[in-house]
Length: 192
Image 1 (tube, rainbow, N blue to C red):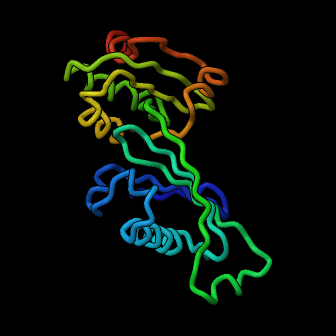
Image 2 (image 1 turned 90 degrees about the horizontal axis):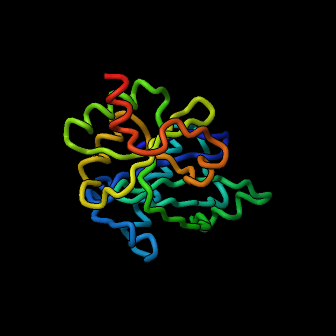
Image 3 (image 1 turned 90 degrees about the vertical axis):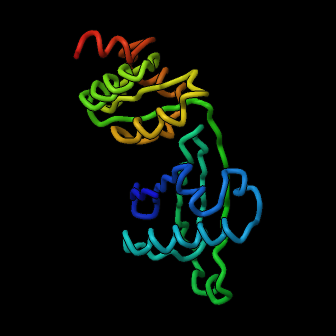
C-alpha cells in the first residue's frame, strides 16, 4: 500500500492486487459490505492519519479507480462538516463511494530515462507495443493487449513508475503523443 498526499484534505492510496490478496480481499469485495473491507478501510484511514497528521473527522468521500491487473487507486477526501463532533459521538464515519474501472494499463513516469530503462527490460523479455505520451513534464506509457502477460509486466512497470488514474482520452486530447505505437521497440532502437 502506497500513500500520497494530494492536498490538505485529499489522499491518494494505491493498493496492489497483492495488497488485496494478502488481506483476503478481491476488487469485487468493495461492492459487498464485508467486515474485511471495512477493516481495510479503517486501517488505511489510520495509516493516512498517522503518516500525514490528518485528522479524519466527518464525511470521507472515496473515489475508487480499478486498474486492470494492477490493483486499485483510492482518492480519499475528508469533507469538513459544521457539526463534526456530533458525527463522531456514535463512532461512525460516513463514506460516499464511487467507482470507475479501466482495462488500460497506464503508468506515469517522472522522466524519460525511467521509461527507456523499462523498455529495455521489457524488450529483453520479448514484450513490445505500447504508446508513449507526455503531459506537464510527466511521461505516460499505455500498454494494451497484455491480457496474458499483465501479471508479469505490471510489477516491472511499478518498479519504474506509478499507476496513473488519468484517462487515456485526457492524454490523447491534452498530452503530446511521443510514440504512437510500438513504443517499447522504438525506445530500444533509438536509445539503447
